Amino acid sequence: MCPRISCLVPYWQAKEVLRMTGIVSPFPEKIELSGEGLVLRDWTEADRAAMPDLFDHPDIAYWTPIVSPFDAAAADARLARSRALRAEGTAVLLAITVDGGAPLGEVMLRRAAEGSEIGYAVGPAHRGQGLAVRAVRVMASYAFEQLGAEQVILELEAENTASVAVASKAGFRLLDVPLITGEEKGRPYALQTWGLDRP
Image (cartoon, rainbow, N blue to C red; front, side, top):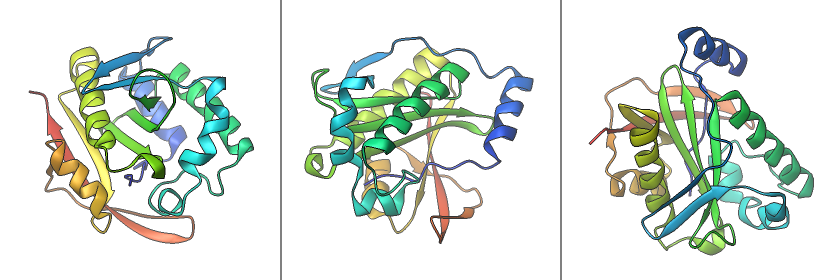
């Protein structure tokens, strides 16, 4: 399944911290990453029809902040948000594919004052192929090699056993830091932080 993507501070405040500390710099206009038998590419308008099948699922609704139900309007909003976050230099959201074609899920890299965070969601029909582990590894390599990150993190709930397995298989270790607590979609959550250091 997928780790919850969260912010430790309000979005507007995080954005201002990033601006003041000089962390924000533009992401490239086009990104395509290859490795681990995957091609991570930009979302396009042509993907709009496929997105509900990937994201409109109880697991994704429960474990992530992705809107539910996820319909055509939600797809339009997510595409627009992806473009806005890229333009601000805050985050990049890429479609997970095996050959640059049909999207099978999404992987995200969010740059924030507290570090570089990766999140992901894999469509229910495409699980069991190691897509999440491989996509996380490819995105982590991008963060290390192209963005100069010293560490990347995953924030996830201990009860989300599938995501704990992904973190472990991708080489992340549980960090000895306080839990991140909050409430989303009417339920409380407590997030562990898992880290992977630059090789």
